[in-house]
Image (spheres, rainbow, N blue to C red):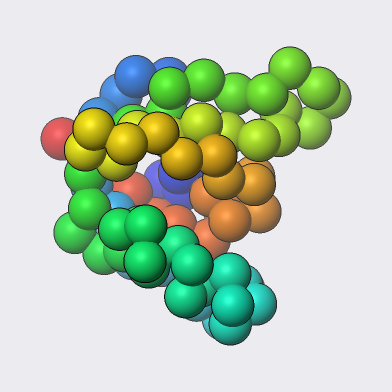
Length: 79
């Protein structure tokens, strides 16, 4: 399943990221924040607008806002 379809507060591990879907500077920024294969992640909440953007994700003790298109590029497995 992709990160954008993960239920809220369900913990998961990132097992693959399609970096080709993202602009190089966006990919670099996400990696710097710890968003990469092997990271444990959970969705804190979703945006309230029609596209449900942005998605707030918890990575360790940090909360990061991601665009839905970025979350769609990440494959996760619930843990």
